[in-house]
Length: 382
Image 1 (cartoon, rainbow, N blue to C red):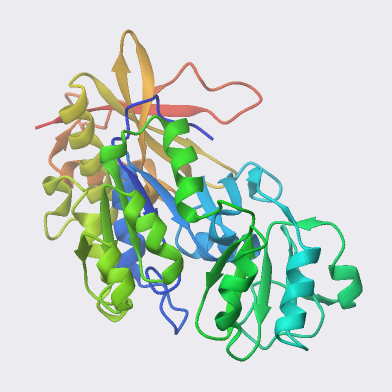
Image 2 (tube, rainbow, N blue to C red):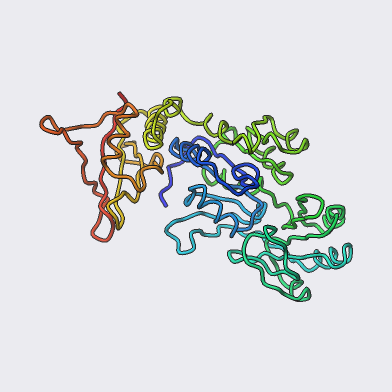
């Protein structure tokens, strides 16, 4: 996966999934996907930060159009890189594990017969009894409680009536305990949260702390909202969550995350009437010009079909072309579509002087015999 050089993307946007990007009905609004693509085209880092397991994260990320980049799941216990080139679609960067035996024993003493699930990273869960539909992401494997006590895991989920009343008793064991309603507790390693994982990603990406944004709606988002320079709570979030944030947006039914995302997109890309491809080209070009004026190109390549397999904007810096931003809507389009979208966005490019005045695409030196040929078209903001 191609990464921008340090400093190209000025913001890291951490986003909860359930209740923030996806509602209870499980639907992903097209407006949300388009806003996410515009933010990425503006050169920002979009980082999903969820309480879901890795299996649940991957399913949601695909539906949101996010197949590359950083992500945090299991309430910060797992940090992963989404990577289309990997056979699994991801690479685990860090897994924070803890010894689960003492926690499970104590939970069973406090709430006899409690439902216990131990996360099996990348597959699903080992459970002492079957959890109901929708309670766990991924498949479940029935496992005797005695076997669940052995070894380490990234997360343990506890489900029982009023089990949240026992949160403090479990915290005394030195672990992190996060309630999700009265009947659910998530247990992770000491000092684990979405915020701790996001801070590590921020440092790796070289994003300034004042350029961090987070949007969430749950108790497990409180630390993340406090970590971000701009913490935004969804309008339907509990009072404690909204109090932890410096800002409140609309509810999930109102697509409250969308205006926050669009606030990070250059104004020319938000002009009414632009197609998604035109808006993303405008976002990438205007961002590039604002940050480092100079020559730029839109670069494309084909896969196994006539449609484009990728589309990106690159800028010339210190004598070499560097990655600026992806143009997600360029995938599955054509080179002619890119030309039309560029004109629509008020961008110009070199063309012939006679006849149909075709655009002057050029073959890049990056293409090789073993890989797809790449083509690039210089763009200028009119």
